[in-house]
Amino acid sequence: MRVVMAPGSFPPHLTAPEAARELTAGWLSVRPRDVVVPRPLPDGGEGTPAAVAAAAPDARVRRVPGCTGPDHRTAVGAYLAFPDGTVLIELGRLGAAAGQLHGAALTATSRGAGELLAHALDHGARRLMLAPGERAALDGGAGLLSALGMRLLDTAGCVLPDGGGALARVARIDRSRLLPPPDGGVVVLLDTDRPLLGPAGAAAFDAPRQGGGPAEAADLDRGLARLAALLGGDAERPGAGAAGGAAHALASAWGAVSVRAARGLCELLGLGKELAAADLVLTGSGQEDPEAGYGPLTAEVARLAVTAGTAVTALPGAARQLRRIASGLAARPLP
Figure 1 (cartoon, rainbow, N blue to C red):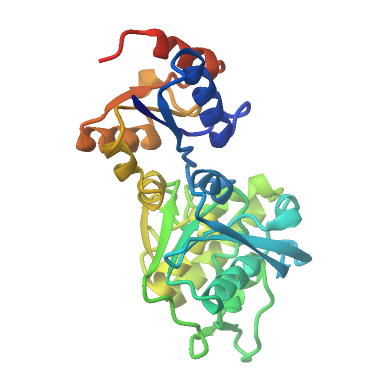
Figure 2: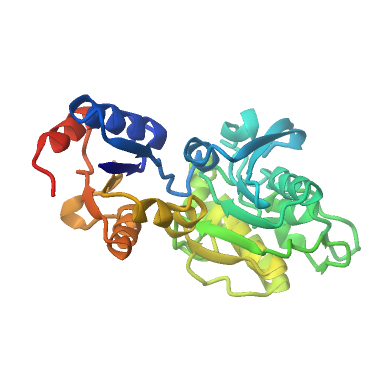
């Protein structure tokens, strides 16, 4: 029997790769002759490249020293490169500086994410897949676009400093030096439906998490609105506020398309083909409540399993003893 272990994370106890290992160990303790394939699935949030790397042995981690951290200090960036030219980058995390945003809601920059994108393009990236992550700078992707060659200018024609606090002074945008996107396109893996602006937008949600009060959130929202007016695009589109507004910037300036993170990552990992060759898949996430309906990750795995004609079992969202649960499932009569 061939079984695929495709769990998400079970915070705060287990990452997705750890959950897959626990399920694998539990199943093999009862059915040691079965073929068990671990395929941990990230949700598009923090740690997405690391979780994908655990499920994709052909992917290579590329480290990029000398990047600009969100607090403007030098940091080491990294991204995941696949043999077919696909590159996966987490926009909201950059080296050791990733946790140093508290109190920096107005000044934090996404420039380092743009530097990673530029590095990937310089090294042959054909398609970019971008996970928002959890710790994005609230600059609407301005720093990211600046690293790619775009210039944000004030009324005197001077280049604005990095940080969301300066966006209200943007008078015009110079796109003449903006690097083109790769031929294979740019995909943003959405883990939120947050719009860019307003009471449910990026500034209202993220500013308090970065130590900003109502005044800072209002200033940032005004700046994001000014940037959006110059960039164009649909600031009210669900997901436009992902990664501190970088999702909107990439859609407007680079034509990036957005897909649900679960669907995009399952496609990247070739889960559909894996399930077509399997008899059973176990999936689930600790962030789900089965009584309220399963979340997008479990729903996507179940959709792929139905398409492949493969049996699927969803784990309870509150699971803590995954090894025991897997061994119990393995001990039951199987179809």
